[in-house]
Length: 96
Image (cartoon, rainbow, N blue to C red; front, side, top):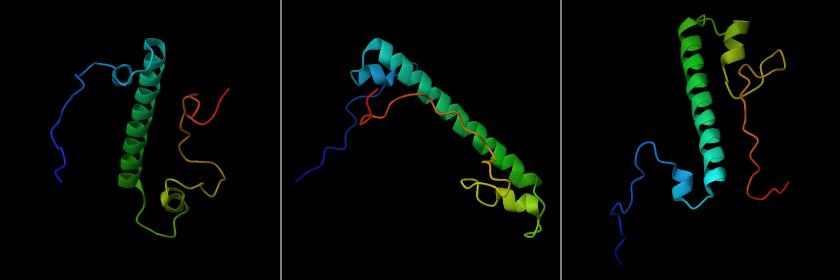
């Protein structure tokens, strides 16, 4: 048995991947915008984490270090250190 590993299609830069996947033009535009926002949010978060790691005190007992020790968890103040805007797109299993 052989497995086909050849690339059969490449989406061109600037093209809308969602349109190529068969979504309507309107829905593809919304999905592309939402995906771009998520990518930008992720890049911004990574940059914030990189800057914070460079400026954190080395003391493990520091309350500032504790707030950033696990970026995915809630800090000691009870809030997430970086609020992330999530697009209002229903998941495939959820209907409005």
